[in-house]
Length: 384
Image (tube, rainbow, N blue to C red; front, side, top):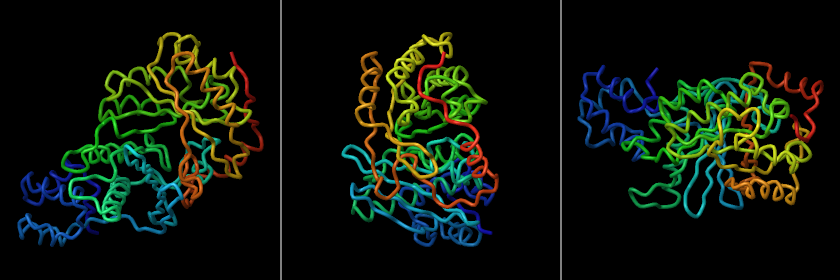
């Protein structure tokens, strides 16, 4: 089977070309053709030696994703569904804004973490995506949008990427890091480290590895200010409790391209949205709670996310007034706080709604159903 060149970062492509007897600069030319120009036909890569083009035709390909559907929201958000084989499909979302174009990228077919409020987790888990399948989402979206918007050469449609689609990126680390390096490479998409964000539910060892291998902006799915409540929302908290997670965040700041961590907090009606919990959250990030006392204040930004309901969750969105009251507590304490504007909810492209189509091979879907039936979600209120 032909090698898909989307699977390689620049160093990987250079090594592969070397095995063909080609010099590094040929790999750089090839890399630019693929990523900067969106070319998949070797015959049209005009500055490559004919001998190299002939070699490539026999052993390699640029295999983009197989598009199943495209939906455009009333607000301009675009959602694509891609076939990744084996009965699995993943979703990517483009969000146009006045100052940037953001692409939300998936890293797995499904997700094994099983967060209570996330539609993806309720689909179960099938497999990790390969590097090429991750990069292909950006490759497809960037060049499709350039054509659609008739952008001049050198003007990017996408200048912000968030690994916030289907899956837990840090549980697919081996494929994630080469994909990030391609996004960052000046010979590919040239994205700033500040404009590439990895979102995680809190895989502590991999946060530390990312800090060493490829530090980009980090967003952490927090959703609760104490372990008891967080464990009922984010099961991974049982393995990596808050004090370990916050310590990893503090270490990450040593190498991070931004001087703060973004904490994501999905606002759930009657669950995690009281002003008492807001005050507890202030104590947590300011180093006044037991889980963070040894760390001191953590430089952070709080992003409050309106919950997007789906039937299996049994949860509802917090009323607007309660979200604003929660935010006011944080802001009064000097914490930078934003309330995320919901985009693309009319096409199920908003935060927490991505589900795709997943052939669950782990039984995660059944375990989630059993957990919902046997373990009640923690009640709102401060837990000491």
